[in-house]
Length: 191
Length: 73
Image (cartoon, rainbow over the protein chains, first blue to last red):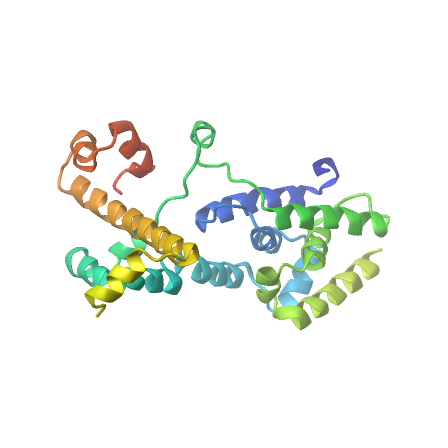
């Protein structure tokens, strides 16, 4: 399948892996592929994204905010409270002794198996929905009799996959539908 | 905040969902504290060997888990 990808589309997928890793994700999700696509969009798609104010920085910031809370979120605090541990008190003690950043800086590293370590930090797997979005991108391209899967088709695949967490980044269901229409329009004009 | 009886009943909660969730949260908390304390020990000049002994794990285990590229953490 990857031999059909445009150069930029390949770069986008590779960059999705790096972004997922940087964001501390255990798997590459469609949201990371989206970030790769936005970062490396070909000019036609770039114009569409710009017109809608969708930027790599914006998506990255939203993703970072999302991943910085858990693990040890509200659910954990509640579970700990049930066995008599006050998470806020623990956090306060750490902050008092090691400074306010210590708590977040100690975000546990993604655990890797022995093969993961041998391959270096670079290898985290694609999550099911991310794979699905790539398959759907291929399908969109075939449907439009396009030989090459460009970043625009990757985006269409992501939109078709409709992963809720990813759709949220694009202004929810309505935003995603509008964006899809724009991309089709752009492809029609280019054809 | 939590009185002794609440603690006693929750810690041995017969509902697996509640009990297991508490175990998961404890593990996450332990991982977080371990990272903070190992970083502090390194900052204070402790060797990986000494840290490993304090945690009662192998030196390899503590090294692999905490010695990141860039070193200081």
